[in-house]
Length: 137
Image (tube, rainbow, N blue to C red):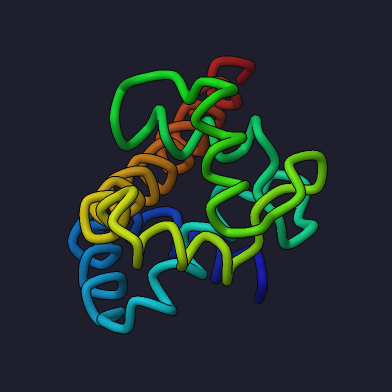
């Protein structure tokens, strides 16, 4: 039954190493184009295929710990011929990495960590929900 399968999955999740499995999957991605695509998809909150000022800012802050200034954003857009009001597409983002304005491998390593935390956070929320359900009994 579906409920039985879900129950078994929930029990197995306690023993499953999400960090290891996420790393295994993302470490298979060697092609820079795939890395750029993965970064864009992760930070593209509105799923329009473009990184807006705010979305690119979140990538920059996650990778560097610093805020992306308007001057840097406009400069990056100008360098790759992107319209600032639209955002930076995958090709433009790849150009920024290719021109050495940011380190793709460093940013991709940050993405790996963010994905792992997201999975572990989801697992933690699922367990917390189960504990709350048990308190009602």
